[in-house]
Length: 516
Ligand code: NDP
Image 1 (cartoon, rainbow, N blue to C red):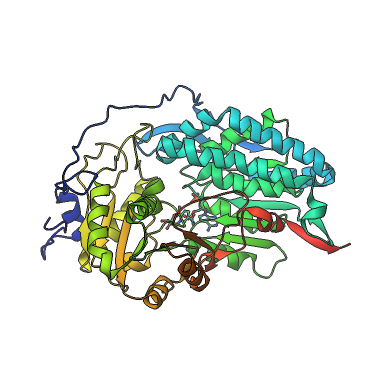
Image 2: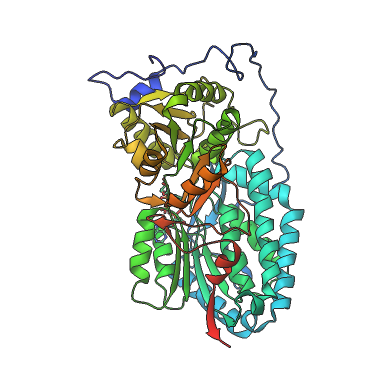
């Protein structure tokens, strides 16, 4: 390592050089002036005891836990320890057929004809049970995903309940939601969710679908099926009629089968752009409704008049929150040239204070990467950054011996043509670019096939408004980042997908509007 940059030789691949390089401990800690004294935090682990895991879980179809038709199972692994948490039934096409039939029956005979007020009652109950069991869900989510407990406890799970509360509020007000129109449910929704926010993505999809009178068949990601299966238990506790919610863990192929099923009326997908394309092709030519929430490569733009210390916190939250495994992560930092050196120094200092390790420790800032495959993808992309000539910086920190961990990483001297500036890394890796004028910032920010989110840091309100209008992104944050609210629509443009989740547009995605 030299000046924070891993040096490679002709015979040594860049990935090996990164693994070998000793991490860099800056001279100062926290304050940027060398006065702050480093200290160690005592471990503060959250107990796992609140989560009662069974050895095996079935599918949730028609209100009951059932085994897969062929009896096959797969393991869900704790990415921080590499230990198997539980075995989960792997759905087959016959199971999907059964789940779709159950969902259809429930939609036709019960759920679709219930009054909005009655549906709201169930959604309120679900929200309340989730709140009552929030600590259990937070611990479980951290165990299955690798995310820090302070994030699952303070962000994911509160937002999950908030979504159910919010859409419960719409269920009995559908006739006022779209003035002059009658809102009818679409029918049965196939919902496929990713592994980065498993329970939150479930809530984003199930809450509006149920509020509008639809029933659902949901496939969780293979690395994180557990919170969805615990949610099945919440549905039972809330006395939800059988078949309204069906949960079918299984491999990617079962996702393909589900979205192309003729018994489905609507498909909602969150995940990679590549799979989004496959799904869009399979739905094309049918009358299924489709919403896609895909990848991103967001620009976080810092102007020279921004409140720098506040911006540093926003940058850190933008890219290191959830290990950077966030579709709207601020993975490209655009800094005005006049403040670039100062900001990068401050950022390096701040990175040196991030604690990487046990997701269940309340002091942990950066937990485990969700899977070995994702860790390999991040490592490969970081190696490409080094090989293409960008300068790599990683703070000193000892990584746990077991588990899938990656140091918070910062690249400077990045060119727009580098892969780390173009491709979604989905890891704790920030690429820093500079600009001189607002026009150049706009040009660079929009120079991406994605269009999910952007951030703007400046003291001037007029500049925020001018910049926000020019950003080709579905969500623009000003002097903050990664803020979510159930009332606020979320979604992208271009290769980040189409359709919106959250707010009234999120409800719109689950209804057919007819003239009165
Ligand atoms: P995928 O898009 O493959 O997975 C997301 C979900 O789709 C999972 O439930 C997955 O099932 C399912 N799936 C996969 N292939 C198909 C298919 N052909 N038809 C229907 N469903 C399918 O993401 P990965 O997990 O492979 O991650 C790869 C990259 O995608 C990440 O590195 C990141 O860049 C991006 N990503 C973006 C996300 C976002 O929020 N926008 C979320 C997750 C990933 P299974 O788990 O069984 O494979």
